[in-house]
Image 1 (cartoon, rainbow, N blue to C red):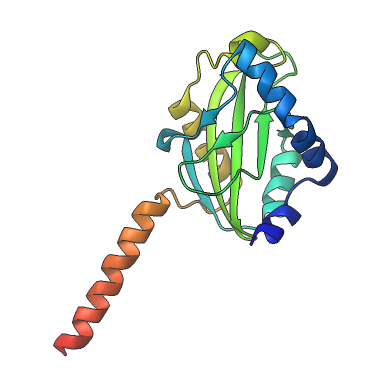
Image 2: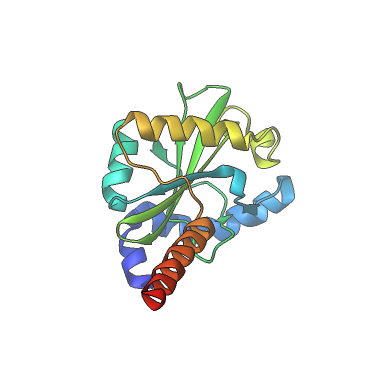
Length: 177
């Protein structure tokens, strides 16, 4: 599984990010908070589409891959497969930050939040001032749907419970018959 996920990464920029990441983290600890836990309030939904196809759609619509983003830690065990940002202009006050986590080549969890643009407000950004989780999630949900991409907004945990209940009902129904 790890080799499949590694093949999904942007090649050279991702490797540069991995190489320079520890230095960014040390700098971040000095200036701000380099570790960031993704929260349920940032969960946009799950897209069943190849990662490269989804990221191409992001790129074609003005999103930029962000190799300088901190390591975002999801509540579930997978590492992020990319950080993308959207700004109306390079010096916009705020940006939409999107984090992708590919669990397989065609199964991507999407998280998002609205935050200060790191280009214009580097210190506010580093200190994670004014992050608007629900606003970013809502904006990204609208964007995904407006591009005709199917989105499952139920969390993985909720889907697992729903599937288990459905399977249990089938099982009980087959015994009762």
